[in-house]
Image 1 (cartoon, rainbow, N blue to C red):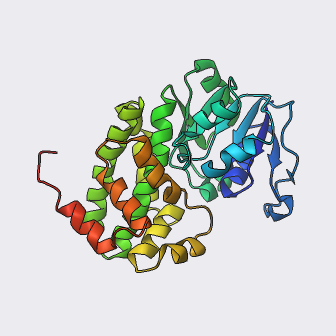
Image 2 (image 1 turned 90 degrees about the vertical axis):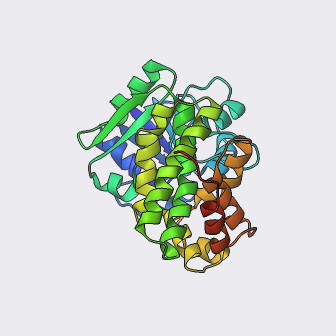
Length: 304
């Protein structure tokens, strides 16, 4: 039986804790405020994991990952479960781990997974990405169950970039629907979004086939069409005329795509990412919805 520590008790952290228990592991859940954990099946602690665990799942927003890691030294391999790019440095999550705790083995869990469905035990799939094959296998063994199918992947860079960029695309998809531009426009945006994810991942050293899989296309489809996506909800509100402050105030949790959009452009400087650029400009107040749409549609015609 594995012993797993889950750091972060938001919706995703609690869902992962339940899934780890379902897979047969003993689970320790860390929460900044244990009293706010409403799941009666889970017991949370304010004491960060110091040792005695086989894996540590890091389920905290990427913009807070560095601060949380600074509070403890992982004594086991870590699995990054948040998606994004650090705004101040442009680093991917595993790069943040390595910067704070050099040499700690790390993997990425990514895929089209809404927390509520994972918590409920509904069928789902994801990837575990790591360059170390033995680590991939151990994470899969610890977390997979009959309803949660995990695939290995040796391209953590591509997996992390896809997971980050899809949140930006989900904001764009929400804007399209909120502004009443139709499903045709959303389908076109998702398709061209895959092209942007592919170019961006390749520029950072990732692979196109990773973007075509669960952590890229799969996650993109879910977050651009599923109403439970916080990033999609944010875009929907913006498309309907809300300010960014209003959209964020109404969101049920952290909207990672807001901080990720400018960080992604900085990290992939020089890469052609027009949708990401349009979202970043919209969020920064440098463009309007109508202006962003007009700019994208006015791009020069060319072969696909």
